[in-house]
Length: 84
Image (cartoon, rainbow, N blue to C red; front, side):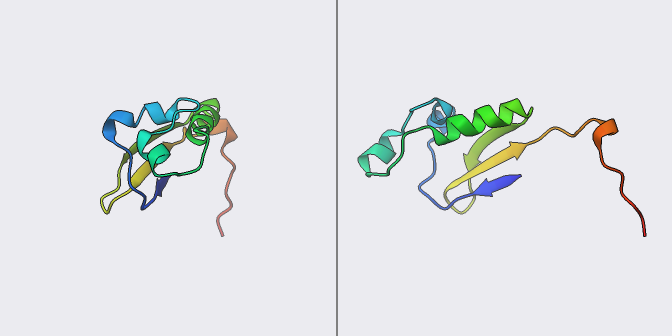
């Protein structure tokens, strides 16, 4: 799954730090953006509990792209589909 925004983006050197609980980029604190720095930390933990991952990158038109990768379910847990 891919999620894109059109915000100011995240500096490459901060892309891992934004997943630390309570970390807020200096740019967001200077610009008065509200928040506690928990959203991405909680997101990563929830995804890890499902065996999924999240990776951040620059969006081609500005902003940030978050790429979420989920594992495939075991074959015995995939629901059968009916043809017809």
